[in-house]
Length: 309
Ligand SMILES: Cc1cc2nc3c(=O)[nH]c(=O)nc-3n(C[C@H](O)[C@H](O)[C@H](O)COP(=O)(O)OP(=O)(O)OC[C@H]3O[C@@H](n4cnc5c(N)ncnc54)[C@H](O)[C@@H]3O)c2cc1C
Image (cartoon, rainbow, N blue to C red; front, side, top):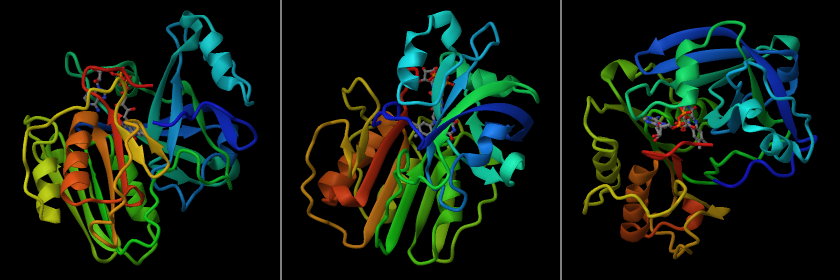
């Protein structure tokens, strides 16, 4: 993922945010409403798409680090003693509700709590209660671009695919998408009860794919390939990269050039989720369909066995 940590300034907001409400919307998701005066100016309602934000959770002392908005907030955070720093993770804005001092930022947290798959953010969300405080780092209202990857340009067909961590961004994209392109959204989730009602624009099919205990990608990969008419070969394979895969028109974690052949004119593919699954889909879409870099966003939102940031 490109660094979101440099060059912060008047274009970004570091907000102290208080949990206002928590709802367990399905077995695997906790929805959290954050409030606070700093949020009046946070994010871009109607143009949120897959906007990512940073959430900083308090350290065991419960005291949030003091960071001042400015170009050096990342350095400020990194140079704090570890015990005072808390934990930083990346999330998507599921919704921005209200106006001014009544603004709420809504985030859907996946509850991955099984042994070996749990982490501080997921644990925090499973216990979150009104009054809990975090720091949110994201774009200032009116500043669009940084941390936003969904860029279909003039695509006529949009393919959205991802696992539960991508579900909030996919839901938001479907809500914010201008009428025009048709397409399909494939969302792999842990159980059938995690398939939530999701309005989609005309010409869009939304398909929830419950994993029901099978491996990550077991439902998503065949569904996406079938949709594109591509034959699956090989098993799920993670790229031997230190960080999750991140391949967008403006950034390549693999440092590879794509052929730029525009193998399926009019198609734009946005794929996010577990890095090995995303890498497998990338391999098929790039090799077998010859998609150009401008037509794709492949994003490892997390990676098995690795803590996020
Ligand atoms: C741009 C972007 C947007 C994202 N948006 C969202 C969002 O809206 N909602 C959301 O829930 N997540 C989202 N994620 C994913 C989230 O950042 C990671 O899942 C993160 O690792 C969770 O932090 P943690 O502290 O719970 O676990 P970590 O400490 O990061 O990891 C601990 C262990 O948990 C495993 N793990 C991490 N995530 C999962 C998972 N989902 N399922 C199973 N095991 C996991 C890791 O492999 C590791 O072994 C997004 C990520 C990115 C990059």
